[in-house]
Length: 421
Image 1 (spheres, one colour):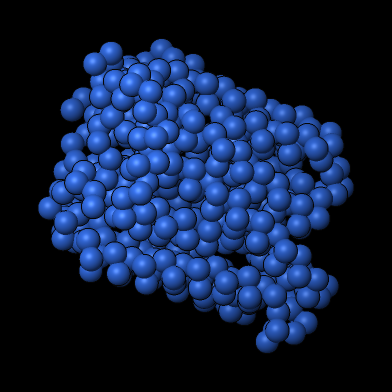
Image 2 (image 1 turned 60 degrees about the vertical axis):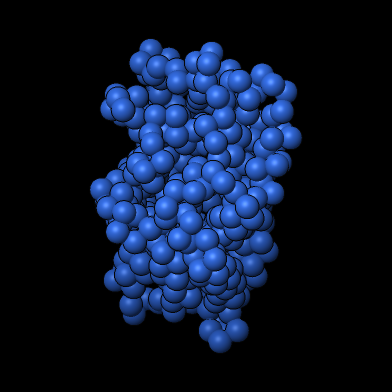
């Protein structure tokens, strides 16, 4: 297995996630500023619009990558990302913010395509380790992205988006010149796509019970995570008085922990415990962190945020690459782009559902805040319900993961994934 293509994929995803990481702490402040005057509900819908477009187009791009190759799909998606960010940065009205996020979402199939690329160049035994590269890129993206967004916001709240657009375009240039194609003329993916089975083959693969459980757990986990990301910046602003700069460094801290686990430890942990066990542990840790977060107040402050953030990061770092590995192992070589595209589509649906749900809960939560940022009625505050609903959703994912491990765990461990029941 050549290392250079994996390094290029890592850099590609890392740069892309730096741009994604820039959005999270800055976009709520940008949209709610005097220039656009978006309500908290509109901020939630702004996050959701990106995900709705990904929901529609991720499986399409996944199948296109099977038919025409990973390289052109990655290139087009990066150009679209660059355009979306530049529209955000130069926006003058609220509808332009939505347009920028929609364009970025339509072209946002690069993660599933990058996963399919990794599946092309790794064995099933090394699949989780390979997917851990994506996780590490996510983690490092959350290290540098939010921190860069916070710092650049001091020179103008729109500057981080202009920087992200330029970075994505540079990423496209890098990919064009150095990334080799893996889908050759005799590749199983291209043969499968040329046979005309495309979506029918994908639908048949989704009927497999094992893959269905993996996608269900993944969906619930992303819903919980997206609720948290939609509300977290506002929570820290109202409860602790943090601005985009401070929020950026908190997200960076969380990203460091995630990068360490997914970049250096996940392969060893999978070999020792197996993917199903890591999904169980990760789901439980993330649920616990979501439950505990709203108890953090000014008296606990930064230490409380750092503690719950660490637990949350560890949980997600164990969860995400393990689920991606299980989904990839459930597919044959000719369906990697389609199945991983479907997984990305499930994630996009979750990222649409989560912020949409959070948008209504956030509005109520903010309405219950006093001028000093403290809830006027702590026992009945909507901000508690927002985090607790996310925690409950993740706890359901935990129970499903336990059932899944008891029923299919051994078969996953011994590499019988392609023989879906």
